[in-house]
Length: 235
Figure 1 (cartoon, rainbow, N blue to C red):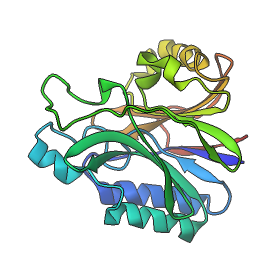
Figure 2: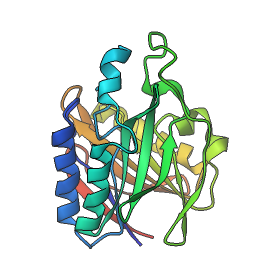
Figure 3: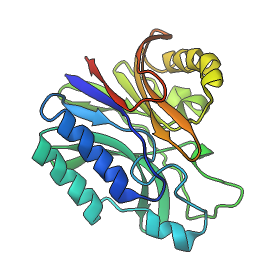
């Protein structure tokens, strides 16, 4: 199995641009990888919400929305599956979620269980966390998804003997990354022997992106910071 970790730029509140970035990566690796992974909240941008529910319910999308249907159709068109973070609307609730689309269908939808995605002191009851962490199979391989702070807040809930997929959004400086990268590798080892972590690039605020393979508490491979690229990981 070949997995593409995509460290591309997103623009907050610009779904058409962010979808074009997804399509760009799919065209680049058309039928050359099994699925592509994008970072946390990539579809709308991590800072797309302003915690006014009337505004934010227009930003979030549902699993049956035309946008999700378009992304599903793209997996058929380009022969490559997708995993990506997005702001999800379900009824009157909003979540930070991660969808996995296989051959035109959403086969897994994970909702972040840690609170760090939101301004929880000013957000209301509409902004919720998920309750469940579930392994799932893709082409016979066990996968577990966690989003950003989940592994720091609830590591025991994500223990797996499969592969951990860890989309994040963090805007550390390059100097901070030197200290934090080894810590992320060690934290991932509490959960899985092998972890694939992907971070997006943004300009406001500045995020240097990156993609990483962590194994046994060490960084085994990574993309350079600050450059749009895709790392292919064979498992």
